[in-house]
Amino acid sequence: MLTQASESKTSREDRSGDDWVSQRVTTNGVVSVAWQQVCLGAHHAGARCDVHVDGQLLRFFIGNELVKTVARTSGGEVRNKRAFRTREKP
Image (cartoon, rainbow, N blue to C red):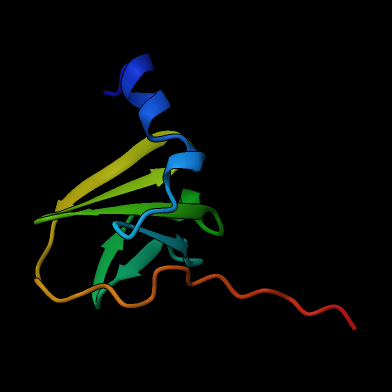
């Protein structure tokens, strides 16, 4: 469980570095990072998820809540850092 001090360190302002990935949780609750699929639960469907890629770990945050931590299954580079699509206004 995160403490107040550790939560403030992972605020959204701090999530712009090269070790952070932004994804959207799919309708069935899955997030894919570097070809690794991780289930966060269908109740998180549609939520923005920030993933901290830290050596051999992936840490999944929704807002300031640490939802899940898993071991990486590959050591390759994460290429798509910001996977959000933006809607163009006509």
